[in-house]
Image 1 (cartoon, rainbow, N blue to C red):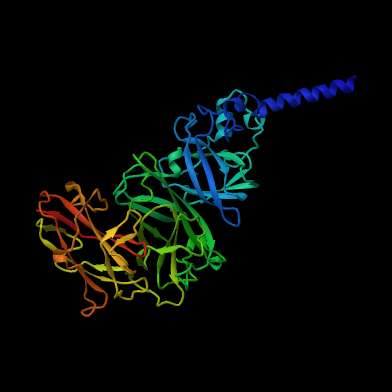
Image 2: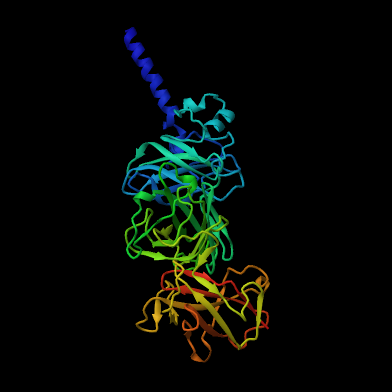
Length: 497
C-alpha cells in the first residue's frame, strides 16, 4: 500500500509538472511554433515566423522568408520579440545566419537581460520560471528549445542560430531577438540606401524605380573558396574571400536576396531596377585580385549553381571604402557573389569600371542644364571586367519589364538599352538615384548608337533627343541596361530650362 501511494504521488507530481511544462494555458493559447515558450508580457504567440526554404549540404539555411505575425509582440512593449522558425527546405536544418541593419536597440543580438527566461523570472511570481516551465538555463536568456547563438562580438547586428539537434523537414522551434519582425528585412523606398551588415562588412541596396514599401531581406552564406565552382560562361573565375571570415581556409560570402510585396500596392519585386554594393577586406594571403566580377543567379538559392549566372558588375576599387564591388540588376530575388579571375592582371591601385564617362560637354559632377528639345551628346568608353574595351556593342531599342530586349529583332549580345527617367525637381541638387517616370530617350535624327572605336577603342556616342515641351525645372537621369544583366544609373544629372 505504501508503495502504491508512492507511485501515485510520483504520477501526480509528474502530471502537475507536465501542466506547467506547456500543457496548460500556454499550449491552448499559443497554437504556433512558440507554444512551448514561457508566457511573457503581452505575447500570445510568435511575433514573426522565419520559413526556411533552402539549405546547403551542411544544413545551413540559404534562403528564407520572414512573416510578421504580431501576436502581442514585442512582448516587453518595446523591442523583444519571439521568433518561430520552421524548416520547409526539404533537408535537415543545422543553422541559420541572421543579420539586420537596424541598430535602434544596439542590434538584434544586443541582448540586454530581458529574454523570455529572464523576463518571466523578473515579472512572474514564481522565481524559478525558467525551470518550472521546462526551459533550461541559457547563456543569454534568449535561446529557445534546441538552439544556441554564435554572435559577432564586435557587431551585434549579426549572428548565427545553431540547432543542437538538426531540425527535420517540417520541424520547428523558437527563440527571441532584440528587434521587431521588420528588423530582419527592410521596407525600401526608391532613392534610399539600405545597409545589410555581415560581420565587419556591408551589403548596400539602392532601389531606383520601385513602387516603395517592398520588404527586402538579405541573408548570407559562407562558402569555402576551395568549394566554389565557376558557373558556365565564367570559366576561370572564383569567389572573393573576405578577410574577417577567412582563417586556415579562405572563405567567401554569398548573399541571398529575397523581396516580398510588403506594403507596396502590388508585387513589383521582379521588375524594379536597383544597384547593389559590397565592401570587404581581402585576406593577407590574397593581397590583390584581377578581373573582378559580380555574379547574380536569378531565382536561385545560395550557394550558387553551376549555370544561369549573369554578370552585373559595374566597378571595383582596391582600397576599402564603401563600396569595393558594385553592380546593378533586375529583378531582385536570387543569389549574389563577388568574384575575380584567377591569373588576370592584378589591380594594385585605384580600380576599374565598365563605364568610363561621360565626356565633355556633359558633366558627371555638376548639374547639366539643357533646353527641352535639344540633343545632348552622351559620349563614354565601355570596358569589360578585365579592363578591355568593348568594341562590338549594339543598341537595344525596346526592353521588356524583365530586361529582355524585344527590338530590333535578332539583336545579339552585347547590347545596351538607354532610358531616361524624370525625377522631382527638388532632387536636382541631390544625388539622384530614383526614377519615377520614364521619358522619351530616342536618338537624334535616328543616329542610334555610334561606335567610335576607330578613334578610341570602346568609345561610343548616343545623341539623346530630349523631349520638347518638357516642363521647366524637370530633372532627369540616364540609365543603362546591358545584355549581361547589369544595370547602371549614370552619374550625370540633367535639368530642363
